[in-house]
Image (tube, rainbow, N blue to C red):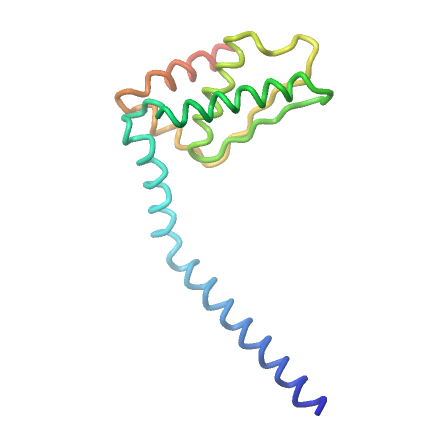
Length: 142
């Protein structure tokens, strides 16, 4: 009895491994289509308002400003803000807001910004992306 149960387990793992491999292989072969869809969907969110920040996004950004401000006032050495994809231009605007408001404590932690896979090269070209263009200009001069 021990051998058939063990054989069933081995076969089960083998079939599961083959299935997992086939699924991963499918997504690797089709990644260019999925990735393009993701990028266009991500960009479309900004494009629907022609680059202007949507009201619900403004609310979230205000919350981020508050949370980062709290972190800057805590007992840490560094606050790292990470932006990925559309989060990069959100991070740009949030950090610009913190700097403009003078919310960086002089003797506080370092504020760092890491960007990954950003849509910033596309979004500023939208007609109503005035805020993002102003924030990028402001940050580049700091």
